[in-house]
Image (cartoon, rainbow, N blue to C red; front, side, top):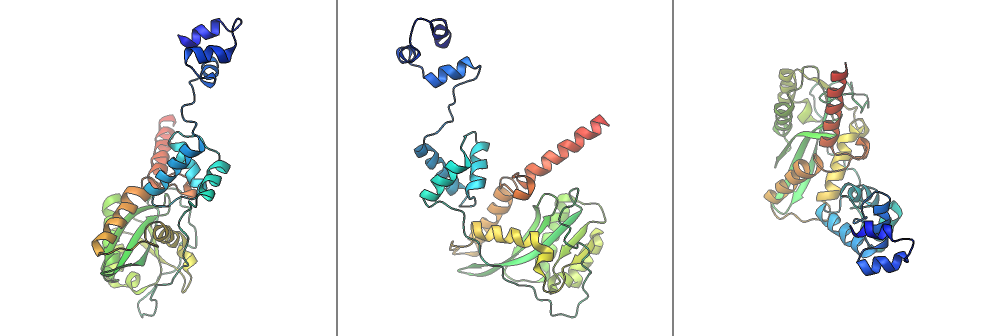
Length: 296
C-alpha cells in the first residue's frame, strides 16, 4: 500500500522526501515499480566479509575465491568475483596450499599385473562404468592410518572406502565390497588401480572376478594413469589433513568420514562437474535420463 500511494503522488512530491516520510527505501520503491522485490541480499563489504569467513570456517578452508563466489550465489547472496577475491586477499583468507605428490606404490612383486585398459579415458558416459582405486597414508599421534578409496569416474563420487592401520590387501577388498554393496553395478565394470602388491594380490583379483569386473592397471611408475584418484587424495589432504594435528586414530577416522560422506560427496563443488557436487551431478543426470525416456 505504501508503494502504491507513492506511485500515485510522484508528480507532486520529490521521491526522496516521500520515501523518507513513509519509511521506505528508494531502491525498494524502484524494485517494486519494476515488478520485483527489494534486494535484501545486497551486503556491505563488512557483511560480505563476515559471511565469507563463516563459510571458510564451515568448509575448513576448502575453497578459494572462484568456488567461494559460487557458494555465496548458491546461498542467495550476490557478489562479483573481483569483490570476493579482493575481500579474501586483503584479509588473508585463502584455500589450503597444495603439497607435492608422494609415491607409495610397491610394484616390486612377482604377482601378475593387468594391462592399462583405461588408457587415461577419464570421462565415462554413465555411472558404474569405470571405478578407480588407490591407497594413501595418514599420520596421527597414535600412528599411521591407511585410506583406500573407490571413485566412480563418471561423477567423481567416492562409492567405497576403508581405513586401516596396515596397508594390506584387505583394505582394498573392504573398500571394493562397500562400493559393490552400495551400487550393485552390472558385470563388465572396469576397475582401474596402480600395480601395487595389494591390487595384484589373489584376494583382490578373486573379488573382482566374483563381482564380474575387469581389471586395469597403470603403467609402471606412471601416477598420471590414475590421475583423478591422486587428485582426490590431494584435495582431501589439503582440506582436512595438512596443518591439522590428529591426536588419535579415532579423530582421523571421524574427519575422513565427515569429509567423504558429509562434505565431498554431497556438497563440495567439483570443477570437472560444472561446480556441482558428485551427488548433485548424478541426480541431475538421472533426471535427464528419466525425461528422455518419457519423451521417447
